[in-house]
Amino acid sequence: MQKIIIFLFFFCSTFLYAQDQQLVYDYFRKGEYEKSATIYQKLYEQNNYNSSYLSRLLYCHQQLENFDESKILIENHISKYPSQIQFYVELGYNYELQHQQTKADYYYTEAINTLKEKPVYGYTIGRTFQKNHLLDYALQAYKITMESNPNANYEIQVAEIYGEKGELQNMFNSYLNMVEKDQRYVTTILRYIGKYITDDAENEYNILFRKLILKRLQVNPNNSWNQLLSWLFMQQKDYGKAFVQEKAMYKRTDSLGLNGIVDLGQLAFNDKDYSATKVVFSFVLENAESQNQIIDSKLYLLFVDIETSDNPEEVDTQFQNLFNEYGKTSATINIQIAYADFLTFKKQESYKAIDILKEALKLRSTDFQKGAIKLKLGDILVFNNQFNQALINYSQVQTSLKNHILGQEAQFKVAKTSFYKGDFDWAETQLKVLKGSTSQLIANDALELSLIISDNTVQDSLKTALKLYAQSDLLAYQGKNTSAIDSLNVLLNKFKGHAIEDEALFKQAKIFEKLNQYDNAEKNYLRIIEINPTDILVDDAFYRMGELHSKQNNIEKAKEYYQKIIFDFPSSIHLVDARKKYRKLRGDDIQ
Image (cartoon, rainbow, N blue to C red):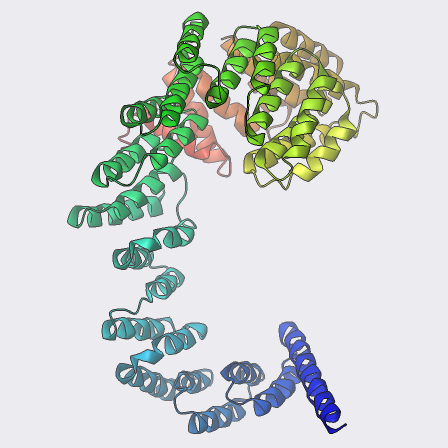
């Protein structure tokens, strides 16, 4: 019986203790400092070695301007626990809050001097200074500790303080010091530096960071500096410059491998930097360590030719050469998928493409390979207006690879196909889920399509204009450009002033561009600006006109439109590219 009573006593005590902690947290968070102080006092008395309770209690008293009470608490605590020398800082700060700076500095100096003798307390003292926004003293504490103990590394705290002080050069140098001490910190510092670096090579922080790395690289060449430079150039989409750094690392380190260079080439291709893509994969091909790397390199070089060549028969011959060399096996499934895409969208031979993919499905392959084949098969079935069959393929991938990027891509394709069919409600259902996709690209595409649907159903309950737009979009997808233009003309004539007018004009302008009908494209872009100068597509229109005139070598006109983006649309996604292209046309040195 006695054991039961003791157990119940401890159980109740623990329960009440936990209840007090939750209650005081709620009071503290709401700024109810009198109530908080009462409970923290109780908790501190129950466990007065726990400095966190005392720190919170002091904060409450100081907010209530009970400075004498704070002073007594601190002095009593120091007398009981002299090893907790961070409370010299708290005592000094208590005086500073009363504008007694001389006394405050005395205790700050006491803490610093104690630290010189006992550097083991460096982090605790530094953090206490930092917590109270005494940044210069915090810097002293961390630096003294690192000088006394070469194994101590508080550069990340030092960098954080410099960042708070706005001393960006010192901040960057502190992060680089971390890497100099231990190269494994590269990934860690990128999380912090990434907050300051943009995709604009002319951003002052980008320039400063690049100069600081180059300075260290000249003194001590090692892979860490090349890795950081490569990362910086990739943020700026300067893939050619990033490749120079990746190549330097590869040549310096035999065990490094080509994976980083392959990833770079894929990024360059996805951003349509075909020149850099070609250089990167030519290098990979020359130094390939496996057949997979050889095949992938040749495929990406072929991708570049598909995008840049005007001779589809020559590209077809290159595909046949690959099949003759490597066969149609599970190792070449990516080539077979690419060939099916090429046949459909470049040569209009969709039924031949379907046969190739159906044969590929018979090969022994992984679930991911099968998923990729079915996605492409669905795309080609949509091209042929076989929507139900396409939806079956997409849904199979969505189900079998639910949590994979291919599954999310399949779900977006279900939404897009439903959109083409005019089933907007089902499309919206799919898109709601995809707005939170782990893939930013899919999430953005989902949001864009969702906005087109929602913005154009309010004033048109029958969704007649939206259906016509969806049909035009499908025609453009199928490469039936003239029919798509005619369909959009019908929409624009019939629904003048409708919310979808700007989308229709923009869609039609892009098709005009494909057909090199630049004058017609520009008329559409100008019409978008005329309809509503504050429309979401206006900056896109100005940027596209800059691109049109740049292609035609109309330098002054292109500069005019790029300049419009720079000065009138500072939040545009085209700002960085517009600035780069404007400066290039102006003849600036942008190396």
